[in-house]
Length: 65
Length: 499
Image (tube, rainbow over all chains, first blue to last red; front, top):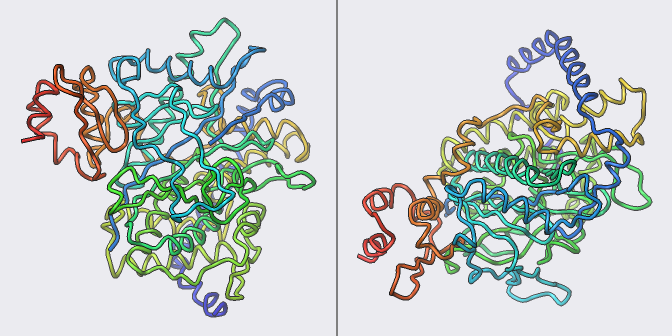
């Protein structure tokens, strides 16, 4: 049964051509994605709460649901 | 045959009053909600001015298994805390020590996403209004998350309308199969573990570690994968409301869409007798924990019949069953157009998880959060024990626009904020929430109480009049817009409805 499940997997995937396009797009945009993450991390350094340790420690939520 | 999947989400939010040494979450939650109600007095209705939530139908101790197991303890209903009914049909209230917002009843998953986003906007406005009333230096902060990472969890519950005739045992099987495995796309991600004596850098969900039982009535202790609370909030001879407590609150709209959309399909399949009930875990609770701890998505889960399959393989199996169900029965039960979008997205996400999970960092919360955390680790040459990562984890869920990391993570949006702003005050047109919302908009002075399945009017000399709304799909715009438009008073409306 499990073997049958595995064999069927290829039919579950997106059509091959879609996969190729995705791969190309990923390669082309790899650098852009890295730059985007760098920008995001710059911004996060600016907005990250100061005194992270105290900030995390003080977050206590009792009495849920 | 599958009944239309009327759905809704109830979210408990984390709350902090920063800058104050002495604060308590109940007062802070009350301040939050009262501040919003006051700032929006023309658009919302509140217990003191004058609409109260009507508790006559609240019975969270009722157990779907008919008899209570000995160690079950039903949650208490607190009737004295702030409880507002909004003109969009939602309920906004203090539940235990958290602010909670229940969306109005929605007809499909996309509508749930719209009203979930409207809920975020309501909380954002509430925070600003409440903070404005605090002394300088103090601030109310709301987090859309599920755990304080110290062992205290709170919920994002989903509700699905089901056919009462389906045996509860079958619901348990289908729900468990999906809830354990859907975590791979519904998880919001969490740094570390809340289990003592365990070591985990990062895991897929916030909630999984808080589940201890396969089935049960509790929501706060010994949490069960399948919750048996039996409060239909509708015609109890025809319907069941399945109360789902396993999900994480999602920042990603795609994740919310898939969480609700795929679950609605699974339950419709079950009602149409097209769910393969052979998917049963040998140890469901352990399987749930394993899935959350398995970032590689490759750990096999043991099934009762001896097979071993990963969560991803089981999700592909469920997806294939759903595709067959669509071909044979159509998607009417989950909304044709929306159902098609769910299936397309479901396949795309499973494909992404299988081939390159990082490609989903704009759609799936645990992957979006992990990208930020790993980027931070690289940049600052730290490791997973760094406290700043825990702060980033929490701040991902911060609803303040100036601080929210989720808002900066490049997450795809599938509903427009212009529509979501409108949905803060306007009810869905295609469920009974329309009637509730419009009655509050038009006749709030004559409405004394409202709940999910009725509205109580006071029109002067007569006794109070309760208008029952036991059918979740009656009271839609199609049914009552014409009548509502013609009536200039609640008395006239009641007369027309009686006639």
